[in-house]
Image (cartoon, rainbow, N blue to C red; front, side, top):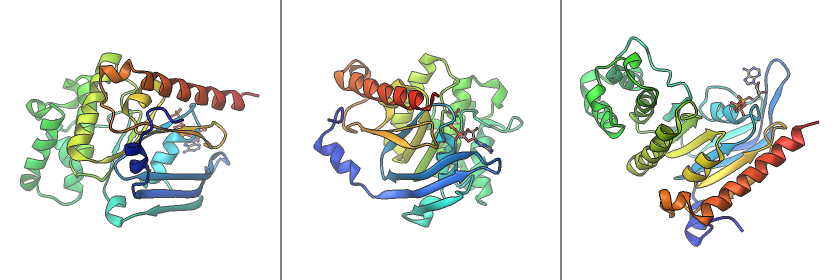
Length: 266
Ligand SMILES: Nc1ncnc2c1ncn2[C@@H]1O[C@H](COP(=O)(O)OP(=O)(O)OP(=O)(O)O)[C@@H](O)[C@H]1O
């Protein structure tokens, strides 16, 4: 039985796939096989987390979906071109332009799309308001804390109103209190902006807290070894963190991770 499974969750699992990876392979020029025969649907509205040992191919999956790399085998099928052409991406390193203000960093994706600064301004201010950085719009990245830099990166990803957000260990470098706060803020942003999120983390607890579905990958060319569905209707709060459902999800994800690590150990 899937922890926290319910009729609501089953309904969500039948949601349309925004993007489908079909028998996708990725072999790097070095000959390293990062992915082989990899199948994955990303369904509308979900927070899908990829969990797996270091080097199992999580970032590669993200990069393929984001169009930052190409598969060497298989197909990536999109539900609509507008989904493919407007993806928000957030990396572990906030990757802000050091010489540009918070405002100008968030403006960047719109500037690249040819939107004039003046007409972009309300959307930038809205995005900054939602991440709590409006009062810092003139600050430079070096004047911000790590958590604030990540908020800026999230605002930059949200400013184009993407249908799909790809987040590669965005909170891994932050202290636990900041990380918890940003987890809650991300869920609030998701409710506000409604994007589907593909999230990569090493943290079982973070995966169990944020996700509506967790995919656990094996080390051997990124095979999927478990899929854990979590009822999206469960409020993500302190009660959830101390609930049996949360404990069950963590236990099952940890067991799957252990299997994936043990089967890769000679
Ligand atoms: N450009 C590249 N050229 C050669 N090998 C690469 C390249 N990028 C990634 N790899 C290798 O592909 C495998 C998968 O890498 P990937 O970054 O997708 O794993 P990951 O699961 O995200 O790892 P981590 O959790 O450590 O970030 C690793 O063995 C990595 O060393």
